[in-house]
Image 1 (cartoon, helix red, strand yellow):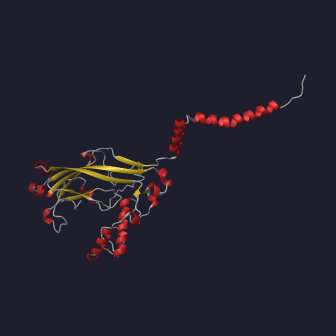
Image 2 (cartoon, rainbow, N blue to C red):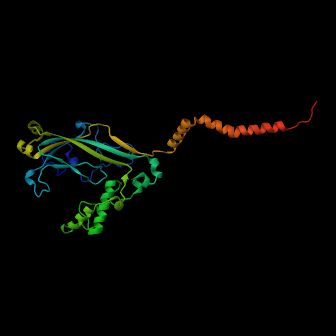
Length: 310
């Protein structure tokens, strides 16, 4: 989120953790397997201990308006991007100045039953991580696939790659003279036939609902520290990120009709239309096999003529 905060670094006890370029404690995590058996809470990626503002992340932001220059937009403020930690950043949300913002984050999890691996991905309409290799990303997701496809198409048509797209060390970064070609390639789009980017069988996405309130003077006095209050009210903003609930929405993709469903539905239809049941099948087997064999043995014994015995 923009640059390191100037006036809050003295008052946040864990502010040094925000400046990590290469974090010390990193937990092995992916979308399919999750964390290890006994993860360390302080490891990266960080996670909340509960729901509500108290267990969330609160940030004091300084826009420093006097240093604004060559802005793409005429407005001032901050941008916040919510995305899966294994994906490239997505769309941003605007955080205004002179406001206290409460951002409620909602997570959406999509999982796929592992029994569907035997189904072709063309029918399953998703890729497991081991089924689709990406050159620039460790984990597969539809966003990562489209981003890599866009990078490859730009390199093919323009012989360069923009700075914001993944690339290797030997690829030339696009210069201002290449922007017309880059813009035309972006306008052409990246459709399904070009990229073959199905959804990931395991994906995590985030949504957010923002609530805004005017930054009160007494609140600003409590958190501004040595910074002049007038400067803080004009250049500052307060942002609270938190989960509103410990519950989340999970969507599970699985077979509609597996073997067990087929067996139960077959038995149900037979019972409904024919009055059959498991006992009926046993009786049918009995009359077609054991009953017939017993009748043949009985008939053979009746046809046997025994000699007269005193």
